[in-house]
Length: 180
Image (cartoon, rainbow, N blue to C red; front, top):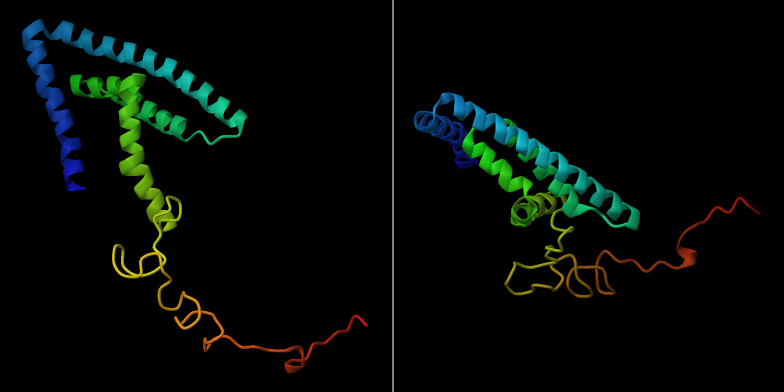
């Protein structure tokens, strides 16, 4: 987590260094114009891609399918809009990568693999992705077999030989039947 925070703190520093270098090369007025122009063009691209993504979400919902990829795209477009509005060359490049569909695709796949799936697994204890062990240690003896207290007869679980199972017939308990 500290590496991510450190990286996020380095981005503005790198932006400042690049803006000063570009201002020394082409002049401060042209540098400001470049930053404003990239922000305007980027926001037009984000707006167009946002509308396209919204139409895809509506189409998926109309078909009764969950719009998972489209929702991730919407989140990435929000991030790209914020990046493109932030003055700087590095943030503009990151925003541009996130707004263009063919470069956003690998970012979406990486987001699903390293962010969404681990989060959902943590919240559902592995049930959402099917990464649930029913007994034993992963890769060890008994994988896929019921563990202690989970199994059938003779394994501590419910079964005819289990201590927790009682065979009770209808004469062993009283039933109050007031409906007569």
